[in-house]
Amino acid sequence: MRLGYGLSLEQTQKLVMTPELRQAIAILQLSALELSTYVDEQLLENPLLEIQDELETKENAELPESPEPDSSSEVQEDKWDVDWQEYFQGQDESYIRPERSGEPERPPYEPFVAAAPTLQEHLLMQLHVQKPKISLNLAEYIIGNLDERGYLTLSVEEIAKEKKVTVMETERALAVVQALDPPGVGARSLEECLRLQLPTLENCPPEMEEFLKHLEDLATGRYQRIANSLKVTLNRVQEFADLLRCLEPKPGLRFSGPGDVRYIVPDVVVEEIAGEYIILVNDITVPRLSINQTYRKALSQADGETKKFVEQKLNAAAWLIRSIEQRRLTLYKVANAIVHRQEEFLRRGIHYLRPLILKDIAEEVGVHESTVSRATANKYVQTPRGIFEFKFFFATGVGQEQGMTSESIKQALRELIAAEDSKDPHSDQKLADILKAQGMGISRRTVAKYRDAMHIPAASARKRY
Image 1 (cartoon, rainbow, N blue to C red):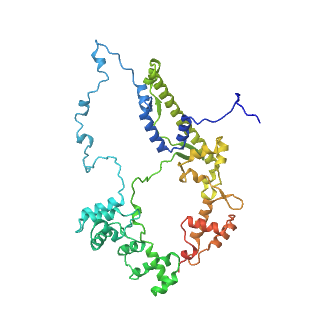
Image 2: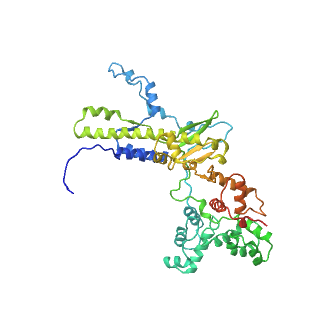
Image 3: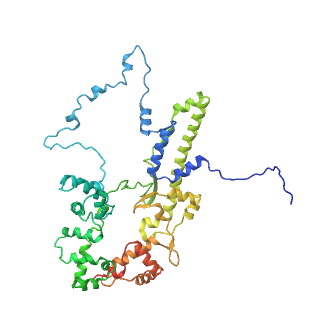
């Protein structure tokens, strides 16, 4: 075989991932809040970008043109001048907050944002107010080692060794922390956490102290074993279990943590108007962008490096505006296709949620599946039935005919378990048989999997005596 070098021409097609295309893909994946932050960063980097104030533009269009300066007419020069000192003169407190006869004076309304305190902040505030006769430094160290549940993550011996104090001093400091609100905080186990909350129960039975030693039997539904150990009836054990459910096993979870996000801003809003569903892309948090005309005019006068810089920033600004608009259109088309496919769910409820995959929406919109995936990633839609994540609507078929979704089957399971006889609850096999009779042919193992996912205990644990 002969080897050699040669030159030849050929035509090929390939996709080049340009920086602009990468930016468009990244923008498509951003939620409304993330896009707002991204736009703010671009406004700082690109001087050709500016926020388009629609209200200001409208007001400027309605205002008459300013008169040309004329040395012979001082009236025209002062036509648009405002004496701000005179304007604010006399606007004292009585003007801002007028008193009305016969009505009590009310403080002015001042909108503010209040951040919920963390568990550590809540405990430290109580500690500094009470000023107990212990080492505050030691108590603060204990508070700093509480996890998000409110449990102490270190042993008393470890704390004493770290702070170079005695175990007795550490025990006294821990007792002070455990006496703070919320009840049960500072516990080292679930049993201790519940025991610390027993004084908060009204008419707490004396057997509750001993009953807390049988939490494992309670979790597995071995009520008879507990009754034999405590020498009480099964009905009495059931009363103890019901009373225990009034306590909080994780007292720290109701407090906020650092960086917690406690609200959702939907990216798409679906409204029903006159029997039809209207799609609204919620981009109110994203500022409207435009290109600064001053820099744009300077492009014709600039030369050399200045012109190159302005052209580069102009292209980047134009591409950013185009990418944001393309994101809005793609998100609208995808949301519209999803609403069209899941209209029965919006009208009649979870039982009518249809199986749906990315390929179905991609074919209807005319884009690739990856585009649909990026357009719906980490985004939420507000509907008349509540706020859902986009991926909620992409449910695979379950059952023999693949006509039911997992969410609809879970809802059917909730209803069956809620309506069962508490003295004779349905087993997983019985639930599977009932669902099969209703056209939802799933196995017993699938029923158990869905029941565990919904944190519903087994039949033995649901049984009441």
